Amino acid sequence: MGLFNFFTQEIAIDLGTANTLIIHNDKVVVDEPSIVAFDRTTNKVIAIGRQAMQMEGKTHDNIRTMRPLKDGVIADFNAAEHMIRGMIKMINQGKGWFFPSLRMVICIPSGITEVEKRAVRDSAEIAGAKEVYLIHEPMAAAVGIGIDVEEPMGNMIIDIGGGTTEIAVIALSGIVCDQSIRVAGDNFDSDIVQYIRRQHNIMIGDRTAEKIKIEVGAALPELSDPPADFAVQGRDLMTGVPKQIMVSYTEIAHCLDKSISKIEEAILKALEITPPELSADIYQTGIYLTGGGALLRGLDRRISAKTKLPVHVAEDPLRAVVRGTGTALKNIGNFKFLMQ
Image (cartoon, rainbow, N blue to C red; front, side):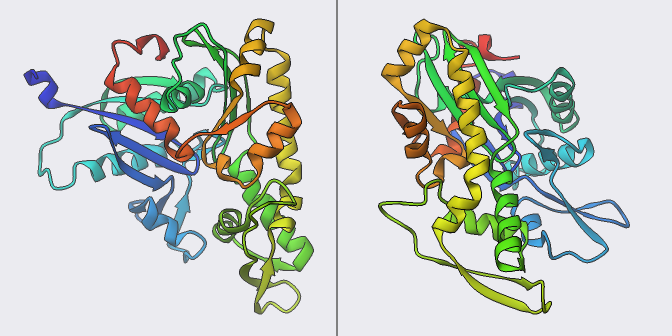
């Protein structure tokens, strides 16, 4: 290990719309919501990640919470830079004054534009990175779940995150065809908010909607192992008084139906433009689901019924992308062809 290595810290970042994960020394050292809280008067950062998440929807006039990423890309450059810097500080806590130079590998959506790519690179550089490499999310997910991406074998990856759903067919170390749609976990949350408002006359916040999605979210109205009904508290729109109702998984499956149908359409479109030889491979290997959306109950069965193909949910789908990014960072020489 040379002197240069000692002064260089290598980190892999999955910069997600909902959560940001960082791998350092083969370990996930940061797993925090992608959210920042600012003081409106001084414009200083008050909290980052989980602490800021607890403030969301509960702030007074002097505090504002912000999600720097929207639809998988940076929407607020300044907030993103503060968030990245704050999360890197979490790794170096207790290291005193010593700040090594950083080499970063960051994953990005496959449908990203050059301008959006530049924003990610600039944010990382302002946050202190000396070298920045970008890797596409479906590619990172494939590496993360143990697929040999260099083989002349077609594999289909569907990564359902917070802001985007990435669908890609991968072979010979490259993305042959892909579909990137801005329908994902955040859309599921807003569908739930609207449904509870329309159906039960109750106003709930995004955090409550996410909790409903986790506890009773489903893609099918009939499940073999159904979750128990979930108690939801919110503001009654008729009286303005706080109220509690019980919500079942069948209701949530009904309200998420439209958004899931859009994801299914994009999957069919990606399969339609796949070269025939790779289609033959996908028939054998099936489809791999990664990302937080893969945890939605019955989603694998629903996609399988629609495509007539086997669907595999990755082990620990939330961390598949960051694990792949970490592997690419560790073997940066071998994986340079995947980098941007």
